[in-house]
Length: 623
Image (spheres, one colour):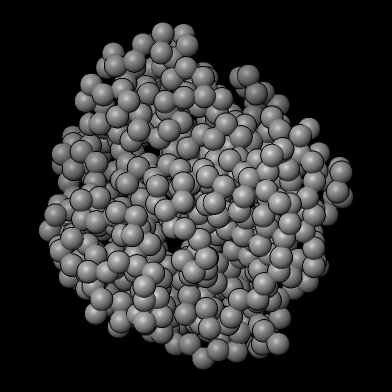
């Protein structure tokens, strides 16, 4: 018997409307865990790495984590993998909620989709079968409507992953939404457009199987060892959700304001934080599968064009994006923007960046009302913000430009707009500022999918949410300095690299779940005998493995950089006033610690050391 996973993957060809089931070897799990790690390995064996992101040959891979669907706390996630139309890189977008565990309950660990259907189609995945359904009547509907229709058609016990109009329209910053109104998003890097290019509207799942667990008592004992610490450390998340952090990060200078240009906004932060949500529009709470944290929130919009709407509560990233980034202090309009993105299937991070970019371009005179379709796109104009979100989803007026991402938008608009386009490798920044915690600078520069905070979360260590000692590092750090920041970045990237393949939420770190604890959960589920050090070694292997996929697509040191606004614009107010990250020094230190060449290419010696050669020899070009 296999523990933790079934060893079965469904491969679907939408053009032929056919599928087959294949086994994947446990040796892949031991090398790469599961999820996105296994997906990358399978990709390189079977599919052209450089296939056009929106072409029929490019695979869309949905891979559940090794621990997903088990009793391990927060084991709720899957990774959606493919080539990003936004960045051109091999990418993953990880999502929680209940869809991933329900998918794994069908008896499959992964779903690999190729080809493109002639007509809109949906999939129904059940135990032992994949069925194709006509989605012509669903095309054009939003993600909530799609979920409701399919539940009515297939049964209330299905959970639906769907794209909205943005994915149908091949918008580069579109998302895949899971769970209907629960609105959990595979948000980043535009994989909703990949799904749309295949004319695949939705994937409904229904199953009752649970992954086998080798030693349930060991899993339970490991959970008990951290549960009280976890609950105490995450009380704020239960009460206020992730948006409860808005005021605190504004004080440290970590909150980006007015398109990354302004240093402080105390009144606005107080008006758009989770605490204010709880006082005014909070409707209820919910959690992902197997999660004791329960950070999900529901809100009821009390004013404006969406008055009366019950919606998913804004997460921190959304509150920061449609609040501080756009200087919008109207909480109802902020919640409405979030709801629109969820319904249309748009990544709230990239969309809010694009809207703030447009507002700055408008105020500088680079674009006009003629470009915006009559919208007065100024900072603080909340209704204009909503209008721009809709235009992005439907590719109308300036929305067609913004939906390509701010990198391409700046290239199209010109007039020095590159100065305020905040991205790395084409991916817009998540809303944590490397001028506040400089360890985030080498991470943003080198993160495999672009400017992704989740590939390192080094500020968890710098602000003492996760003690550095669990990684052999200090607990005390100088947020604006550079000493040992590259070392912190490497260690956290290696550690973070195991969470997605395992299907775990990174908030576990708040309960001091370090490598030893995670390894104990893995061993309890699978019967393996991993140590924490060996788990970290797997994480290092995974990070380098993904780097080599992108090296094959042309990534090198030239791409490992920060945007001009974050390197030269030192804000004059706020908790990080005057701070700038010195990325050049940290990057050279980072490459040395990684064992990469000065051009940022993993050396053959390092790949041999990590067991990637000869295992993957011939799949990559190496230095």
